[in-house]
Image (tube, rainbow, N blue to C red; front, side, top):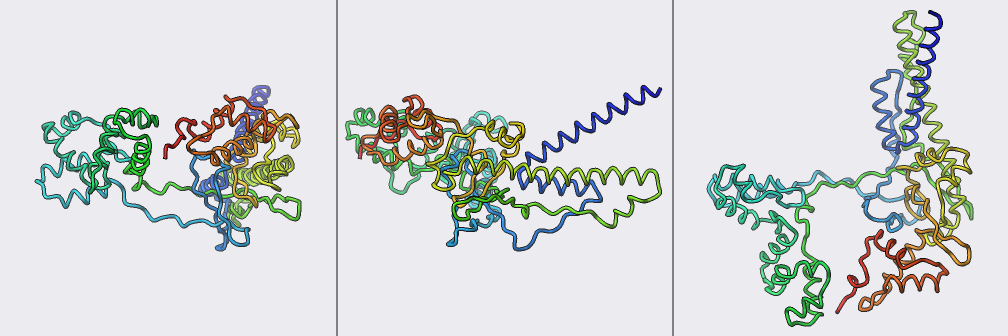
Length: 448
């Protein structure tokens, strides 16, 4: 019997330790905003937890994040002193695309039956303003003739934003061209008959087919590029999110100091009204409060451990990337999670969690800690070069190239070797270019 109890106790303790470890790992991986939300949730579950209100003077640093844009290409505005990052106010709730369409539909001089059909189609558009259903499918859903749906759709496509109700990008652009006060038949014909060639920037072939100069096609392509590929996007909700820096890197002379942004996280303290219940002489109450007290201490310790780990990892990153902080992104060094793990004497997965969704405010802007980890590329002098640094060189070369004679990937590789002593292949250049969403030289070429 005692043996059974001992086994049960051992299994229970093991289970508790496993759950605590899992929660500690989760807290380490939380961003500042996630941790704040977590603490508010715990406050609802644990009567011992009280959270101090933030100081009214506290400011959130906000960046409008495009996940598709490389972090080194983002800029954080700073004020004249260069200390605090500016942020815009969150916009008010915006009118949706469907709201705008329904408001216009109410003003149409049509029968109520047609108005209902148009309204149904309007509500069937996606957030970009496109329709995914055919006239036949809509007619079946509405139990109407296809001809009625087609007429209603034509009316919908006359509303603003022009291009709404299209089923493809080609149709969307054509609708916008047809709705212009001064129509351009050649532009309409190019979109209608040469859309694939236009998308591939095969301007010479279009010019040959239309018996016009390539420069004219280039000018028309530039004009068509001003149209809206997603007409409904202007009505989409403001999805910019807050990015709160978890840590600051402050320059003092030629040294850089790391400071945790503790003020971004609510201060947790014990509710004194419930604290006295810890000594309440009642088995059930005492056991319950003891459990909540242990949870309180554990959360408190986990937050402090998170704080120390992030500081330790950030300090190691600053030491490895000292040239970056002193001179800028072009001096970014190759760095791996393993190198930081060995220096800080923690597991590589711990470094990964400590840098995931964590942001650092530096004199050079706001960066995700993950940004400082990158692979190495061959260098004839030092033997290694950060891949992000090479991307910066590639991007600058393309920005400065002659638009009528854009640089090929092979030419860029040669320039990297001659100007920066960096040995990379043409394929590597192409890979980096594609990662930065930069088209090939043939698609970058301009004819005017």
